[in-house]
Image (cartoon, rainbow, N blue to C red; front, side, top):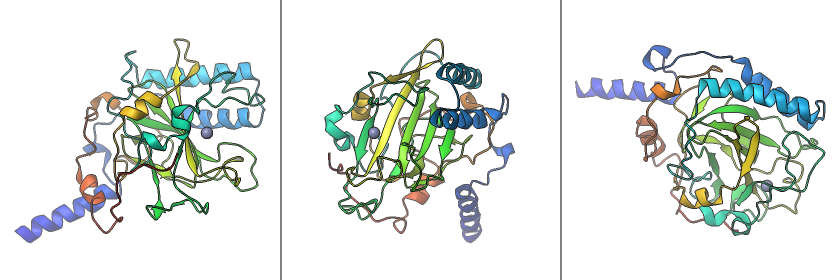
Length: 303
Ligand SMILES: [Zn+2]
């Protein structure tokens, strides 16, 4: 009997890890427009390639965000750094460049690619003297994890060395609680898909050097992290998230997202309520298996 239970648990764990839940076992509902993810990506590409005017881009963005807010109404409250996980596994706010002073939002316009000079974001560094994206102290690639509960709105996975665009490989996540968008950039690897629901500590990818500036030797290996709040008219407004990053807790290991990408809205309010603890499912247990990764101390990377 014991053996039987063990096998059952093992098979369950395997299925859980592979994301093979059936829809019946999840409190899901699909509604809204799944094309929203395609529209979001097309918009980003059009802005980057200057194939859309800033005004048209703004109105398309508002229309997309109207769909998002219909699917995930926001109560207007802002939890700040509460229940937030630091975006690099095993790291904390002391790895943020310039002690948090690298944030400059003056002149920022998400929809106008001809303007530059602003940096409404924080760069979060790993220690990588030889630029191989492996952290020299931890001797491993460093996982980028979702800071909050949200849905992946768009990704780029195919950045090439010859591409000139700045973000490289990236992930955009709409944050259910904060009601805005997180932009994580310069990944060596992106491991989520548009439409995938993620929770704090879930792996989004690995820190890398993709992006026109990030690949150059002048740049130390880092994650570029930006948060855009949505104003009442649903247009984006950058917010300095440094205080939240200070409050964020560190996860030593990333966890795998519980839900596979479905490219449709999921009924978030019926999902598990956000908890102050990381995932308590079999994923956490799986992630804690010693074979997966060497233990490393929870010390921050270099400034
Ligand atoms: Zn940056």
